[in-house]
Image 1 (spheres, rainbow, N blue to C red):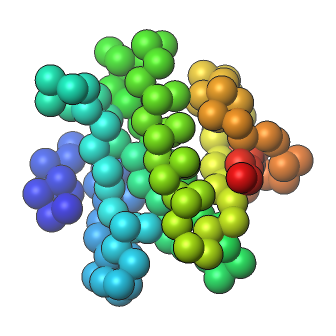
Image 2 (image 1 turned 135 degrees about the vertical axis):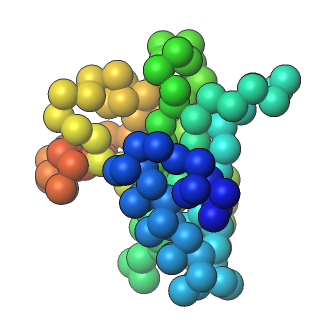
Length: 134
């Protein structure tokens, strides 16, 4: 994660990765809920990453994800989010997966819909919130 942070040029992503590292270090027994997970093709080509933003005592986890622009619209985000959400919902104590998108990010909202998320009607700091339950 330190290498990921050092190699990042986008200040916003650099800060997000640093926050993830802090979560991993603060919760070493639950690092998987704070770490960045690589999204890559079967040939090893890096496409983007995803993460969970911690685990709440109420059984919810929030997912975040992003792909490099050259790979948008090819189904990679849907495939990665589906796999990550299915894995998360099989973990003990996880009752739901939540997500949040910018209001204008219609493509991300479509990914969430394809992955079985539904709008909650609430808004967070980034925009509308979505939930997926088993």
